[in-house]
Picture 1 (cartoon, rainbow, N blue to C red):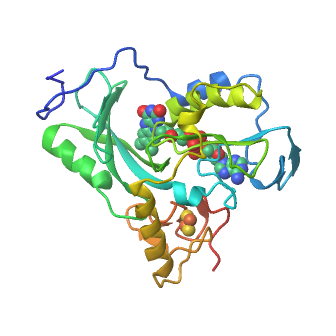
Picture 2: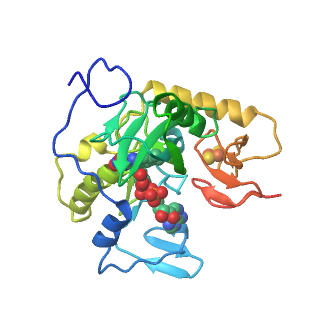
Length: 287
Ligand SMILES: Cc1cc2nc3c(=O)[nH]c(=O)nc-3n(C[C@H](O)[C@H](O)[C@H](O)COP(=O)(O)OP(=O)(O)OC[C@H]3O[C@@H](n4cnc5c(N)ncnc54)[C@H](O)[C@@H]3O)c2cc1C
Ligand code: FES
């Protein structure tokens, strides 16, 4: 397409038919019907295929780790393969209906979609622990292009990014049996989790899946992003500050927008008084 109903010129756009926009909580509530789900039950450790929690042990034939960032650090080298990226969304009232969902192809580009009478503008992305446009970029954009728009709600979230842009779905590592993983969704986890479900339900039953090689966590890690991740790790391990990340010891950065301590290495986050918000760290900051 060479025209879209957004308030800036575009060189061109690719239109995909048959896309779905859905309410994620209603969707999860639908697919979870009939399943036993234990909330507030953090897995502290895996011993083979036994999950150790504060309330007891759960024994299983097979375990799939879907904890956002895989929390077992000693297998699979996920601390080399993954980093995290924050994204921001603001919902505006008195803004137009853009008649569809729009996504910029750049990693730090913007997204547009409506929900009821609101226009949701997303963007301002940056690696967790680094500086980026944040909500300010979205507010500036709205002021310039939709001067009538009034901010109603705002969110920030982050997702795990893989080295090559494709998720890691399959066996957790070469040295773990009956343990599987689905992670590195690159901000497409609602769709990629469906791909994960298709691949993993075959693998746990011992069946082949035509897509397993594309998403195999053991695929090559030789990618320019590996050097970027390595550089961030070295710089932040050598930075002298008192606030250290309990995951692997990187220097934490103060996030003045959200009032949190954020780790540029793999994206763990903590409240101002040191309580864990986002993994891969598994515990609070020590005073
Ligand atoms: C701004 C934004 C917009 C997005 N838009 C889209 C979109 O349009 N389409 C799309 O497909 N995707 C989208 N995504 C991406 C999608 O939301 C994520 O990829 C997805 O939610 C990640 O799912 P997850 O299961 O890996 O992690 P989570 O949703 O974080 O789930 C991990 C779960 O594991 C639990 N957990 C963690 N550690 C432990 C432990 N030790 N023991 C027990 N439980 C544990 C956590 O409590 C949590 O419930 C968007 C993301 C962002 C940030
Ligand atoms: S998240 Fe890994 S060192 Fe901080």
